[in-house]
Image 1 (cartoon, rainbow, N blue to C red):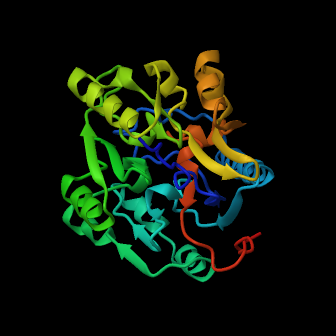
Image 2: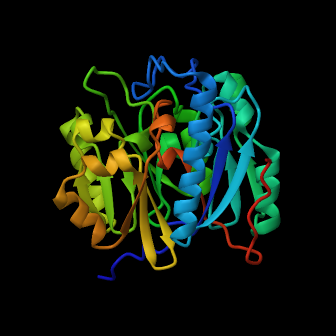
Image 3: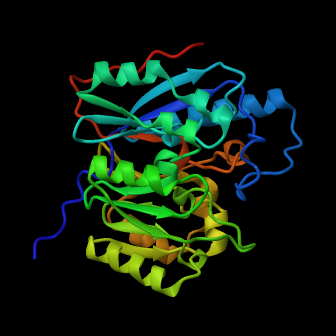
Length: 320
């Protein structure tokens, strides 16, 4: 049996958005158990720290050989703009998808300038805009709601109000993915708001918060699907998921795959878990404690670019 080719899973380029007015979003607090309820910091200090953390992530990724397209966001009314993977995904067949967002103030995060840059720098033949589903109360928050196995063509999805079955079916049919849907809850019994906080699928391994899945049958199915796809399953505890160990993404650097994750996430991993990752990828931790107050971490901050470059594109222009 031929081993699966995972070379298309880790993007060699990414989009980051550096906010100037970051703050935890009050409209997402109700169902995001990872979000801080009390921040207790001066808003200007909070915004500056988040700005600096995105800069540090961009620098770390660039240093690893990942092509980074960094866009500044000076707008004061987009508190979660640091998480572009929720409204944007890109695909190796030359398509870009735009997604419907649950919180009304997050819908302003979709940016035409980002899409136009991608069209100029990469071979984009179609932009599939699903955002109109918002008007019907139908949501699908991109690669936050779905963890995509780009090679195996599987969309792993934890049920929540951020992913509607109608939108999921439309995406999967249109882009050629099979959905594997399951329940996942935090220790208090609340649905996990985004699949990508509990799960990351890399080339050779997958980090999965199996302890958060109450159904043994769904756990077994998930493990079987990942194993059949050539992935070594690394189970994460509920504590490790709370430390954002599942909110990681493998990207392609100059010297091979790199797992980008937060310093907090890395500190929660055991030596045995690190060894599984390091068998095929280098660990790249970056401290993002301010951004994590909003309930997301490094993976949420990264929108992978799976498109074919037209030429070697320059960095996107940034404002101030």
